[in-house]
Every structure is written in structure tokens, then in C-alpha cells.
Length: 218
Image (cartoon, rainbow, N blue to C red; front, side):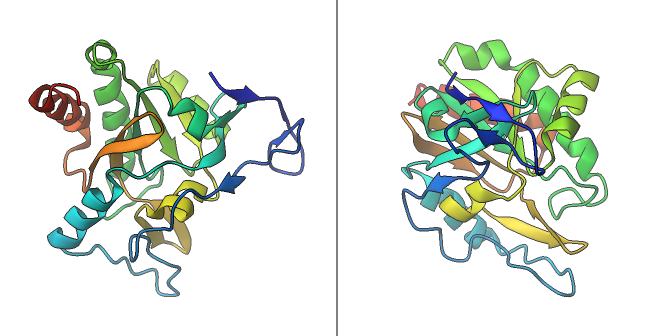
């Protein structure tokens, strides 16, 4: 686990070495058109199937940035160091509505947590561990993790810094920017495979395992 000490104060975590949440050294330019910018009307650009496949395909091979995020337990974690290990990172909205789940988006988040928890041992067989990332505050993620008995980690990215650094798809709802649901298989700090859109949160873990079996885990 690659952590730096964190202090509470001023509404954000600050590491002993001056590391703030969202600090990042971008490794690559964002994907063109991947994120939805602010919209005064709250409209959401869902995009075509071809665009969705393009977003997923363009992420393959991308290096993740040196980015500070906050674990649900309050510690600050370096994304790049963590992803030198094998990780399945699933991004989820964390809000009451999304273009991927409508008004049932919150239930979709829980279903996705449980999907990856259910397949935790299967992923470990491929030297992979799951982690969920959303823009929700760490305390909210920790409450959800405890309530739904999620054994794997949940990380907070309130400023959507990862989306801005890599070009992950987002949307605007009620004047707030949220993550679209997306899954990345990461090894050696690089994205091997991205799944977008995620049509079925409850089958998200099984979808990753299907791909791992099909490709031999490579």
C-alpha cells in the first residue's frame, strides 16, 4: 500500500509533505471529447455506441498519472504506485441519477460493489484486486462500505482529478459533475482493458472475469 500521512482541515486532506488530494502530474493528454463539461441546463451527452467504444479503446495502453486520492478510511493513496500492482478500477457515479442507470443509479452502485466483492477470490487468481472510485466524500464511501459489507477498498476523487488527467467520461446532473460508470483493468501502471459503457453493474465483475479467461489474463 502506497500511502502518505494525511491531516484533516480546511475540507481537504493534506499530506505531511504538502500533498493535497487531487495533486497530479499528468502522464498523457486527455482523450478528446471523453468528458462532459458543465451544462447550465443539466443536459447529458450520452454519445453513440461508436463513441463509447472509442473511449474504451483509446484508454488501452494509457499510463495512469501520479495522483493523490483519499481512501474511505481517510488515508491518502498514490494512484500510480497502487496501480503498479494489478488492479481492477471501477468508477461509479455515487449520485441519485446517471445516464447509465437513471433514477436507480444508487442501486446500481451497490450492485457493482457486490459484484466485485463476489468475485474477489476469482480476481486474486489473476493477481488482481478491485477498487471502486467515485466523487463521493470518503466518509460517505466508508459508511457505504460498512453497510453493504464491501471488503475491497473504495477511493474518493471529489474533484474528478482522474477524469481530467486521463480523459474519463463524466456527466452533469443537478449542476454537479459525476463519473460515468466505467471499468479498467490496470497492470504496471497502465490500462490493459477498459469496459464502457457498463450496461449491467451486477454483472460487472463477471464481465471482467470473462475477458480475463478469454485472453488468458493478459
